[in-house]
Image (cartoon, rainbow, N blue to C red):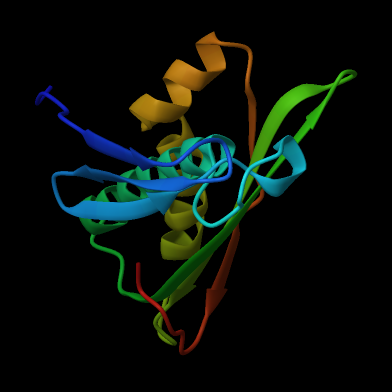
Length: 149
């Protein structure tokens, strides 16, 4: 695994904000308003969920490519909840669109990739070891899609 190096710069107090920069990205960060901050940037839980979502989606894309499936669209929503009863829970909702001439076998292969990508995502697996629940509710359809990740 490659080393990860980040640079974080903070301006001001809890009402301030900052930036975090790594290889290939830079984003604003801030303490959420609900915790007394400015809310003018990404907050830690959002960054954590975005790491899980990007890992899962990139793993899924690689698996779909390996299976030589003709994907015409791939989008995904993710949501996270945190409660005393259920703990921290992330649900990914991938939506794969295969070409109009996709066979039943290709649709089944895409559905298997949805499940396999969850098992193959290193970030998700690390979070699961910390008792984070990760659920996948995927959908495969045939036709014309938009937004290939």
